[in-house]
Length: 143
Image (cartoon, rainbow, N blue to C red):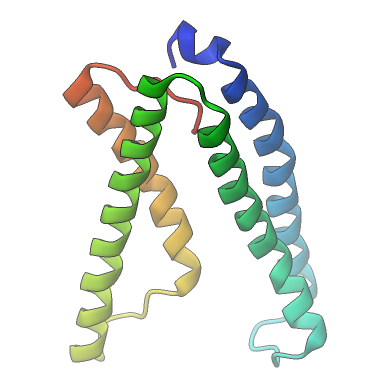
């Protein structure tokens, strides 16, 4: 991240939101791992505990949306939107390819839906590399 991006108040606010949401996500995953046994039935307790990390993911998406709304530098906003578009395209491509492969090749291991958001997050890193390669700049606040 360059100095202009790190000095931008929208990115600073994003980081202040991102850190507690990340802590809640990690705590939610740890709690679910500790309290929900493998092959547990879907009852009120397991659904409630499993929803906690999902709420954190919604929090991350909200924080990213707020950053885009609060970002007053159009160029930095362009970089962030391009990064998200690359991540979305990559995620859609991977999950569509794997889903069709699963459909027609039953011996292929199933891709748990849980991995869709982590794939998208990896796509953000690819999007940042695309920005650097095409614009010579990868400024932005999202990790």
